[in-house]
Image: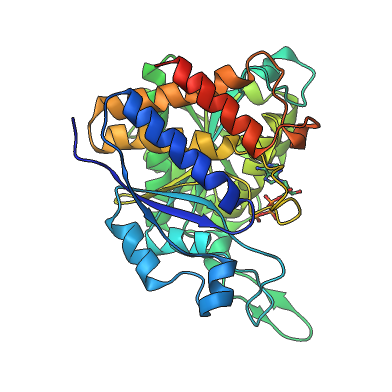
Length: 363
Ligand code: ATP
């Protein structure tokens, strides 16, 4: 048995506050079921609500708590009604990526059995690919900078050798790991190398990195064409790697393919820290109604346990991840549990109860 894990938990704003507790309870239950001690929970403040209260959306104590934790579980942050004086929204979750150098945004696009996607082709019900979004530079390097006067505004995209190579390396390593589990072993560079200097540079870096992975094949796609292919035949992809803004957009498209934002988990991983959070935002339009789908949060919890198993070289965490993910699949498998975002009536309470019951049944 390992030492208890220390988890930094940031519920944030809106539906984030509703989906966090059930997720933490499931993570604790999964750990207990594989014989692990209860994780230490360090609940921390950040977000638009924190900004309103303290004038700072990401307090130093929160950053310190994140740094000292084994992993960080974050729900959702932001509120369109709360803005900085320049009109931009409060986005501490993105500041945290820069602060902790979480350069690899991992966005799995995996169909959950029983949750119908929008595609008519049956292959659209069995998707299982991963989009890696560079998370510390690209167009987002301009956040909080940029320029604006009466006649024009500009934001600059920054693509560095270091930033691109490390994220491409991450993508190739992931493809290698997946290949061991029977996936094809291929990485697609999603860029716009035919138009932008920064993207031609990106592709050169991708090519350089690919030389270190002769066992993994590579493919290229321009971001506009990839958006089309992700709708036409997304099953052709294994691992994709792309610039920050393109990844922001394509990961929402990926979420749409597997039933909506409420089904899409994610991780932002660096060399020393990692944050796990659903792809969606704080959904202020449904906050407080209980209608949110907490599944993306639960699957993010499973991703966290899986990452911890590798980081700590401790197989029981992988087992805990597996049972939690299986409990989610089992809850939806017969197609009767339908979230409100997909026209059903299951919200936070119903989905949490269903997953908890399935998890208990796996004991
Ligand atoms: P951000 O930019 O912070 O990612 P966003 O502007 O993309 O946020 P979201 O908060 O993700 O917006 O919400 C987009 C839409 O999806 C909203 O209509 C919201 O109600 C819905 N939505 C998001 N997450 C969920 C969820 N977990 N369950 C149900 N509906 C959701």
